Image (cartoon, rainbow, N blue to C red; front, top):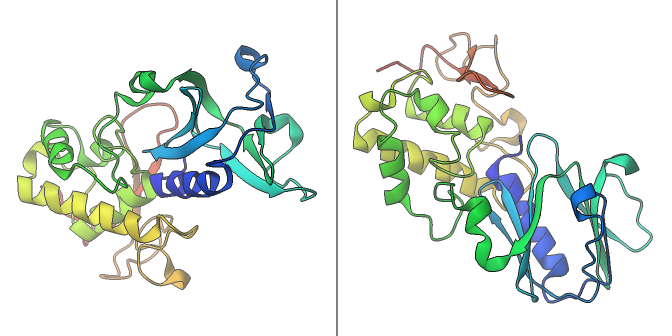
Length: 262
């Protein structure tokens, strides 16, 4: 599933392409929205929230989309070949004077009043990549999770929006905390430091396509994706586990030498 920084960068590029423009043509290839036509509607802005995208229009409507595991938006100039996937995977096409924005394999697509945005994002925790990120609220949310494993808590978007598996694994490694650690065993300082670590890593990458957490593009990650290999720090073998049982539960990578259970 795309991380929050991937969604942030997509929103930044879409906003640069569409904000202040009018939609010249639209095509919604979804049964529920097949008759929707945004031709002539102006785009105020495209904003991210966690892993969600919000296209805000000047008719007081918002288009909400979510990537889930495989969605993406691609931006093309006139005559440029589309490369985001087969045509049958296209869900939305928005054409402006200069650009064509194509949404592939999009999920949770809604059109709603802009004032009703809380109905699709109101359940989420604070957005870790927001310039006005509420770290205090994020800390309260994490501290309220009791005995839940911290590895599960970090990717619970209701607690803190935007963190995905890469930054979960890398933040826990840098904090020296095993993913199965009960959240209730962590003190406020440890939780706050973990939030700061995750935000620092993600802010470094939010304006670029790469997701390096080590500062070295040749060795992009400390533990993520390195199961069975040696830890870059202590040389123990990196192991894998899975989080809570749910659809699409992802593999967690961690180092038993550097990360202790509390």
